[in-house]
Image 1 (tube, rainbow, N blue to C red):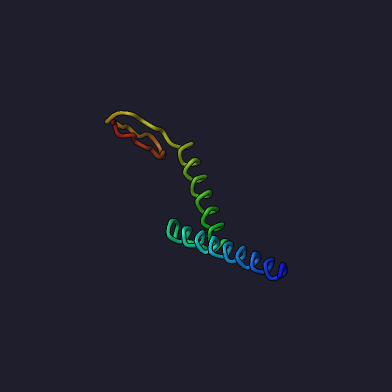
Image 2: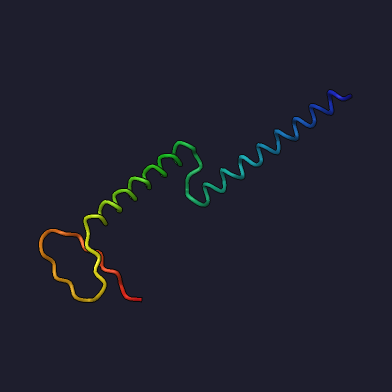
Length: 83
């Protein structure tokens, strides 16, 4: 009888884990459009590369507060709007 109880406990545990796994996959799919681990890793790496590019662009840029800009030479300029 105890063996049956152990099997029932194991089945309930596995069932609970499976439900949790599918709920997590559904959450990932709904929130980021991806639920596959490899796709999620690729998405994160792509975002890291884009962020590194953005930081590199900002290092080579001049940020000017105001409404008059004079540009000399090839530079990228980010203009911050007044709040």
